[in-house]
Each structure stands twice: as structure tokens, then as C-alpha cells.
Image 1 (cartoon, rainbow, N blue to C red):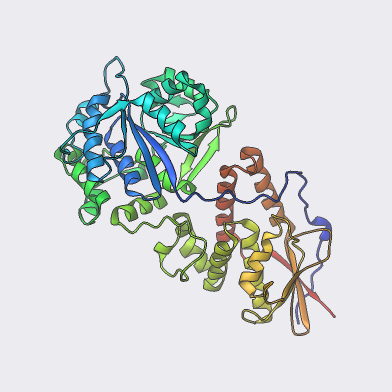
Image 2: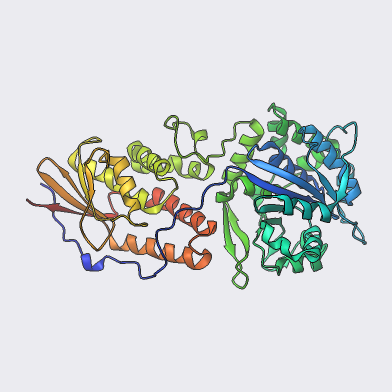
Length: 490
């Protein structure tokens, strides 16, 4: 016999905020259109190479600013790199050199070749004029990838303030934004301060001085053993004696190249807004192991962007999963079993995004099947989750995990004005009610409120937070602990 528990309905927490909940996740972009601004340091070379190698990244222009190298010297480097990737069609713009002494690492970068020189050096326009032209001519807002100073952006905005409406965001590498410090800020802090006050969304990326971000000689070995344009370009530069010596002496860390990885794998970065300027965000952490795995897969030529929703086959190999999901895969399967793992994976693909209540629904459905010791398509379900998100997302997880679907006519919504994460599962003459316990519901509500307050409901930062929380619940919430189960007697 099934053990009977009382359901503390009075303890169920109903959302108290009035933000409309019929929102949908922001659509995933299949292509990112970017303009790159670089001062041609070696880590910039890695970042640009990553972006050149990705078909889902459309590079509209490359701007050369002063910093690690003067713009004119950087033109030689970028011409060779574009030639290596057969991308000479990408226009290049030169900034006006900044007066002053260059950084101590200028001579090192000066002595590196970025590839075999093309028959003709790329023609260069004025950087500010080129930036204006590309922003105005684009049908969509543009992402600016800034690997050096913000000088070119500042000068363009001073000439035409309306350009702010043409910029989707600026992704900028700088040591710190809270407080402001680092070479890319200090080399032209006047321009940086102007742009930071312009109200444009700016995502500031830093390696946070993580020792795990080290690049060692295994990096060059990986490049030498891979056969593609990206691996070849990286090997060409890092096998040169000045670069290889620093690599062997553990001098290099992932830095500006993290910006390239942020463009392709933003879900692996923990971004938070400045409290006094919400348009400016910075990474307070990032998943270094997952990012290194993504980088290695790019170099090996097996990288999978992981943007699919419909699967051609059920994934059984690690490389079929997105890089953040890979980090929980082994532990989640070990804790909860392969049946739940498959149910949650299929739910997420069916649901269209990685959501909290859809995962709860998948776990609930698997628990119901265990209670009745049945397989798919053997249960009938009455759901109290309603038809409005977020609770209604529970229905998708239940359908996938149990096979009780609208198409089969084996799931229906209860005629109840109070929606909640709860459902009645029936098999033959027995029925049970399964409800998410109040303490877990409270945690979800708090996390959703936090995301709305921090980002707003229709901001991608909100959906990244939801995804991060969903991964946490997927791994750590045990279906044997999170539900109240009550037998319903006929």
C-alpha cells in the first residue's frame, strides 16, 4: 500500500509579484555580427582567430587601436592573419596613434609574425569612419568586440551620438571594472570613461587572475596535432621562439581570448551588473574547465555550438552536450540514473530552453513511474500547473517523462483557479498526488525574483540565470526528496 501524507496546501507559495509571466526566452541567435577592435597583442591574435574560425560569427570589420602595437604595425599582423583564414574581404580601419610610450611588452609583440604575408597588405580606412559606416549600414544592431582601448568607440560616438542606438553591446576585455583598472582602461582612460557613461550595454570580461587559466606547452602540442585553419594559425604564432619560450615558462594565460569564448559560450560566464550602472556587467566568475574544453574542441575541429533544440539522435557521448551541461553530466547520471537523465535532456530539447519547472516536471514524471512500476505511456495525468508560465512548464516535463501527452489524450489540466506545481498520476485503479515541497518552491520563487530585479524579465541575463539555476536543480535535487506524495483513495 502507498503511504498517505497530508498536503500542506496553505504552505504553497504563490508568486507575489505582478510581472507578466507569459514571457518567452529570448530567441537564440544563429549568427553574431561583430566588429573587432584590437591593439594586436598575442592574446588578441588568439581571440580573433577563434572568431574567424567560427561560421556562426560574422566579422564585419577589424579596427586597429593603439596599445600593444601602434596601429600601422598592427596592420601587418592583421593582414597576415586574415590571409591565413582567406578572409581578406573583411575591411580594416586604422586609428590615429596615441602619443606616449608604449607598454613594456610592445617589443615582444612587434617581433611576432601572425602568418605568411599576403601579396598585398590590406588597404586600411580610417577606423572611426569605418566603424560609423558599418554601424549605419547594418540592418541589425552590432556587437563591438573590444580587445584594447575604447578610443575608436569614443571618437565615433563623439562624432555621431545616434550611433549608440546601433550598438547592441560592447564586449570589452579589461582587468577590472569594479574598481576600474587595467591596461586597456588606463592607456586611454578618458575615452573609456566617456563610453562607460554612454548608457550602452557593456560586458566586461576578465580572467580574474585565475591560476587555472594558464596556457602551457600542452597548448602547442594540441595545435600541432590538429589539422584545421585555427590550429594552424595558433601553432604558427606560438611555435616562434619568443612565444614558445614564454609558453614554456608559463607566462601566458587566457585573457583577451576569453572574449572570443564569451561570444561563443556566454552561458559559461557568471555576469553581474554594476549596482549603480545596470548597463555595465562584469564576470564575477567563469567556468574555466568548461571553457578550456570548448577551446580544445575548437582547436581539434570537433566543437559543437550546442544551439540545437531537436535532436537527430539521443546523445550518448560527452561531446554531444553543451559545455555547461557536460560539467554536471557524470555526477547527475551517477546520482539520479540514466532514465532521469534522458528524460530531462529530452524535456529541455522539447521545451526549447533549460527551465526550472520543466526539469521538476521530468523528475516528477519519473518518480510517478517508479511508484507504479510502469514504463512510458501507461499513466494518466491531471496537472494543476495551468497553462501560464512558469508553472505550466511543469507539463512539458511530465509529458516527456511519462508519455502522457496531449496527442494521446492522457494528460489534462485541472479545472482549478489556483495553479501550482502538482499533478495526479493514475494507473488502473490507483492514483497519487505529487507536489513540489514548499521549501523547494520557495527557493525557485526567490531565484526568479532575484533574476527579475537584477536583469528584468526580457533580458538575456535573466535567462542565463534561469539556465544556471536549472542546472543546479537538475544535479542537486533528488526526486526522492523534493516531492510530497499522497495516495488518493477512491
